[in-house]
Image (cartoon, rainbow, N blue to C red):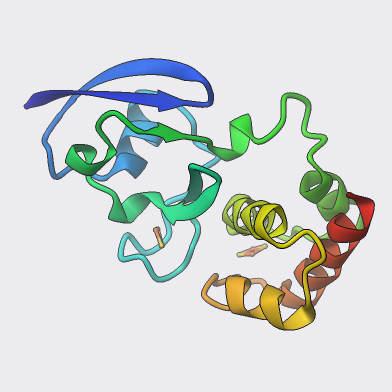
Amino acid sequence: MQAFNIKVNGSRYRIDADPAMPLLWALRDRLNLTGTKYGCGAGLCGACTVHQNGRAVRSCQITMAQADGKSFITIEGLSTKGTHPCQRAWLEEDVAQCGFCQPGMIMEAAALLRAHPSVSDAEIGQALDSHICRCGTYTKIRAAVHRAASAR
Ligand code: FES
Ligand code: FES
């Protein structure tokens, strides 16, 4: 066990953990930020996506040793009232089915729109094709990203 310091959604935390423990477990099990989901644990599904310096990263692939001293934003911190353009567009397009993959999808889309405010269909595909939705909401997700882009 070692002590690690991370900043999440603007608050600082000290986490005692094994250096190899994934950041995802700190978020979900220590900080109770369960909006970030555990899907594959292998960097393949995107369910665990959070932001680090505005970039989308997969928290199951970041160890506590790597996370030490860094700042992260989770879906809970994306906006204070759920009014981020992506969150609004997701509701307006009625995207979610079971909802499990959606926090990761929204975090990826938010990072994409931050980097590319007038995003192309190809760029959406490039960013989101590595996310898995078992309910097959891909078409609605794409529509929601376009809606969020035009709302900015
Ligand atoms: S749980 Fe991290 S990519 Fe699947
Ligand atoms: S909405 Fe069910 S996995 Fe995507």
